[in-house]
Length: 592
Image (cartoon, rainbow, N blue to C red; front, top):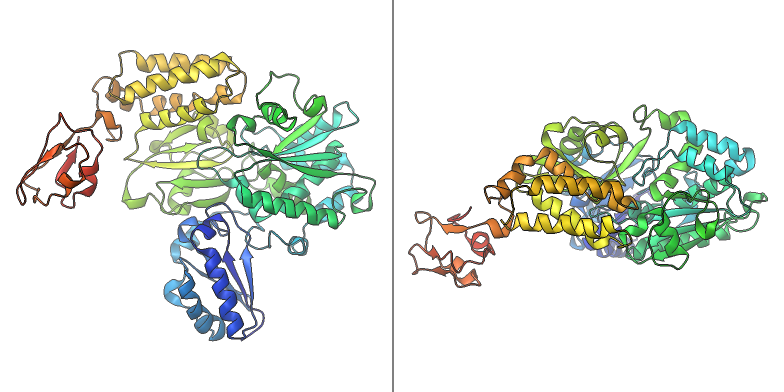
């Protein structure tokens, strides 16, 4: 047994939820009892998906021995002893627990930049990050170059903001540098609120020092002496690791007075958000940090000129800042070699929904949706047909299956009626209703609207009312056109990005799935058989065995029948709950 063996157990939220803590404890116990010289480390991890990105396979365990890596999937504590005995001690991997070919396919087309050290360095150990080259980019920037050099490097890299709008990062920093003011601020926006999104959380939980280093470099470039990380309190593990990272960086002299032996003073403070989606908008975020209610204000003036406490302020999101150390370390040409002409580099996406291999992925800009869904994601679960892909969260839109070969970049998605956004990507199959999906996202934005401006506050409420009416089978002639006109007005007149983009899911769904809207309004039918009030249930007599399962499950007493004889559903009593459909083992209940 060589003492070069390292065991890495996924201990991200996904790994923890799947029992990672028990697996980790069992490895430590077994290795100790058998007096085996191996080190057990937590993998630097992410939200729900574990450090290796493939959340569907947690708990994931890596065994590194003499330069060879072996990855196990679905590991439970009672499986650990066999791995220790047969593999770590005996040198023979447990073949039936190893990851399969789909695991390799999941990574084949990925390119790791932001996530390159996630899963490799201990997020709670600054020495691990330093050993991987961490903080050398900041040291080089502050001691061997000027702020202008840093800005030029970032501009030449082509990096655009990864928070949604895609504004050129180098240009933002240049404007921040040129802004008048003795006191300037840099803010990391970690208020990730899109449904199904967990990219920023993954980066902070897996490698918080990359974000800290990115903020140091950004502060040097614009001339800031104070930084804030605005992060939602619902991310307790991310907050805990970020606090530890700041403490460690301060102890090393990477933060505080005269950092890296220079004249630069710079500190970072954490501000916890209460989970308001609107605080992802930069002026609302600033108001929240100042202790005010998180509500946006008109622009201009832009934060880069008058931001936090009316001082010049640059705001970048987590992924944007985490890119910076790698760009400085490897050069702008290296980074710009990935992606497309106008969308350089890579993008981290949270791949979720009706997909075989959901998880956290990082891919070069310009990759197609087909490659992401069918090669990386492994296709649609249960062999269903793909219907659409929702990108950009509540601010984005749905791309139909007919556009699978669309390139994933800022301009291509914008032309298709969606956005890259912060990186949420939800896969929908044939069983999803596009009217209901539009209602879901409008309900989210309507609930999250701060209420400051009438177009958003009232407009989204009207959108939701119309969509709700349609999904109940009460749609009226002209409703679809009314949705389009109302959406156009909300986009034009709303104060901030929340209202300006809230109608996007409605408009994109009508654009590509108009027939489905027509079926709801004109025919009072939901083609996907999702909208409850539009459904009816009946028992197919020739298939019914009279087992009584549906009768017992029906909460409304709508089903009658004798044992071992066909049962009947009374439409007048049926509350359309679907309990009968769910419990029938003989597929004798039909949903119409």
